[in-house]
Image (tube, rainbow, N blue to C red; front, side, top):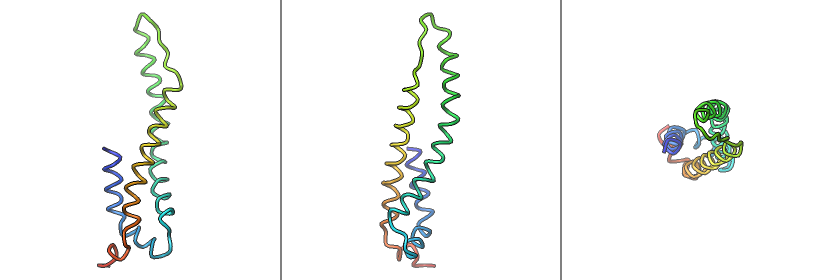
Length: 110
């Protein structure tokens, strides 16, 4: 819900910018890629901070158990891939709505 709310709010705030880009010749694919790139940068930054921190905290927590368990690297890769897929799908669907609107409606009162 957090990503969906952010994408919805940003697409509402950038409606005029998207309209100007479309009037100047940008395609829907150009608009979608710029929005996706913007969000994926933040996802990568979050992963860079979250993976080492979670690895350290999980290993410290698992040290206290009688049976030792190791968390494999596939857990982190699968969590990252699920996050990437979720962000790309959410941003694509919400940005598609904003990018396919008629730019005249966004720029009418300017």
